[in-house]
Image 1 (spheres, rainbow, N blue to C red):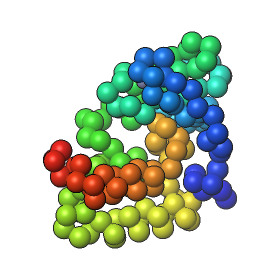
Image 2: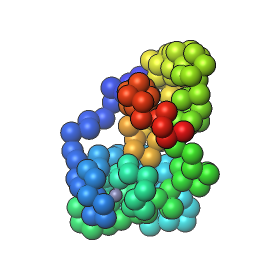
Image 3: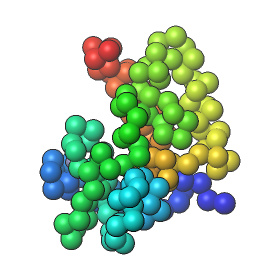
Image 4: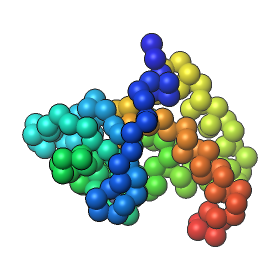
Length: 152
Ligand SMILES: [Zn+2]
């Protein structure tokens, strides 16, 4: 069984027509698990990209001009704390708190271990279709840089 982290290729990127941030290619499987009913019925097969900029309303877009806004996605129905890990429902604030009180390592190891044995579900849970682990590394970098200390 292939894990989400070694699975599909991430070679292709396209700039979001709304904000210009480069979006990564997502699989149709991700799309079918993210787009809400009844919009999912109208989903046409195409090569879609995901805009990961949370301040941008664009969700998925294709080169052919098809677009699906974030409001149409399941991941954005929940009150949106900055989500770090969609598989295990961990948000950024919770992880920053754990970095402060020294429990972060255990949380990260849990995620790494589940990912290794294929019990994560990034491809369908994460609207980007990408592995959540990269988000942890990014947040740690920001945390060590003092960026988030000022933010929170
Ligand atoms: Zn965008």
